[in-house]
Length: 273
Image (cartoon, rainbow, N blue to C red):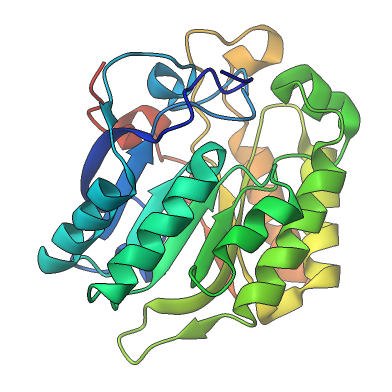
């Protein structure tokens, strides 16, 4: 086991239709979501901490064929897409599962939902298999990424990863139904006390990609049991409104601004714990 504290085969906690993503992902029928256990980053404020800090022992072992079968079942249930949440520490098996499912009739978009802390060499396993990437860009400063995610090199790794994701998918494309068919949505969770770091992230994303990508500005941060210091508090409404205005001032029209009233606890699925 490595830093993720998981074995070398996929462990899946939950497979379900999920309605808590951006509207162009969830639509009306839901996103066919597969929640993997473990994580290669380890943020101290993780919303899904009950399954990300493996091993939890409550998920199900799934080989590539079982995963592929689950993708096809979600498609049969009417899912708009397949949404793989934190799959990257199982990348080889997951990539094979996507390939098997596509050969067996999977024809809805496949999305990878990840922390953004991924090597380009790993992402290339998904080249031609994944239609949508939904990475985080959590920090600009190595000070905060070291303190909160044990990764002082987060920004440099994440920026290279997002470059590769955009290379693979190209510009964001919506279908006639208004749902995303291909492209990248970069998510940024507003953390308490990090207003200027968030502005640096917005500066970077808008100057490098502009409206080629979607930017999702999230205000749902809710203190988890492990929170310490300023992470015990929510970001202020003033800070969230300021960042929303700042993003708009950059000319970003491909954007989602989460309502301040959003509660992260309400968005946590009923995991097997």
